[in-house]
Length: 373
Ligand SMILES: *Cc1c(COP(=O)(O)O)cnc(C)c1O
Image: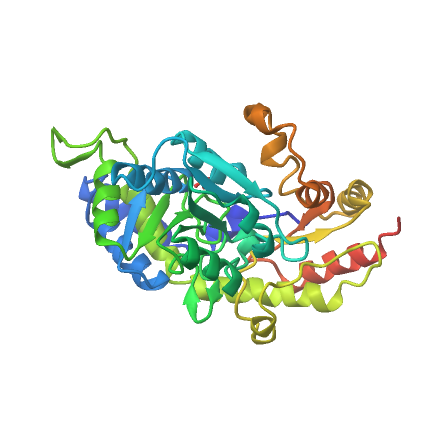
C-alpha cells in the first residue's frame, strides 16, 4: 500500500538530530516560553521574511489571535465582516466566528481552488474589515486583483498560510504578503511538529506585542493581566523539533515540486482534471507552489478512489463537506455556492510527501492512468 502520508518515515528521516534536540530540552528542565521558542521565532521570521513571528499553540489559535488583537485595538467590532473563501478548511471560518465576527463566504476559481478576485466586490459593505486569504493546498492565492481591492477599500489582509509555508508570490513568501498571517505546524503540514503548534507572522510591532500578550493570559508581566487573553503558547519541545525541521524545509518543498511536476507531466486520463497554478509564469519556473496537497478532480471521484484503494494507493478527500453545509453553521446551510459544492464533490488528494520514492510516484501515475469509468 502506498500511504497517503507516511509521517513516521518523514520524522525518522530527521534522526538522530530530532531525538537529540528533544533530549536537550529534557535536560534543560525548561518547557515553556524559553530559549528554543525564541530562537525558532527568529529563524521562522527570517524564513518567512517578516519582522515578527510569535509561536502559538496551533494554527487555529494563530488566526483567532490575529482577529482578537484587531478587536482589542478597536479596528474590528462584533458583527463586522471578514471575507473568506467558501471552500476553505473549517478552521479559517471558526477563527472568525469565534471572535463574534461574521464570515462572508466567497467562491473560489475552480481551476486553482483559490479565492476568485472577480467575485469579492459585491460582498463588500461598510462592515467589511478584512479578507482572510487562504493559500489552499500550498498554492499562493494572492494576485493583483485582490491587492487592488485591499488597497481601495482599506481592508486588512490576513493570510491563512497553514498549507503554504515556503510558497512564493512576486518574490515574497506567503505569510509576508499581508498585514498578518497564521501558520500551522500540525504534524501533517509541510513543516510539522510532533503535536500541535502554530505561529503568527507580521511586520506590525503593535500587533505583534499584543498577540504575544493575548496568547499569554493577556499578561506582559506575570500575574498582571491587561487583557482578557488566553493560553496559547508553543512549547519548548515543539519549538526545538521545528528548528531541526525548518533547516530542511526548502529541500522538502523542492522534492514535493518534483513529484507534482511528474504527476502533471505524466497523468493522462480523460476522467481527471489536474490542478492548475494561479501564477502562470511561476509554473514555468516551478517556484510558487509547495504542494501541501496534490488535488485532482473527477466527476467519477468515488469510483476513482475505490479503484486506487483496490490497487494499493491511499487517497484522501480535502474536504468532503464545505463550511456552509456543516451542521455547526446551520445559519448558512441554505446558501448556495455552486463552484464550491462542485469542488467538494469532485476533489481527491493523491499521495505526496518529501519521503516518497520515485518508484511509488510512478506506481501512482500508472494506477491513475489505468482508471476507466
Ligand atoms: C491546518 C489548517 C488550519 C489550522 O491549523 P491547526 O494547527 O490544525 O489548528 C487552518 N487553516 C488551514 C487552511 C489549515 O489547513
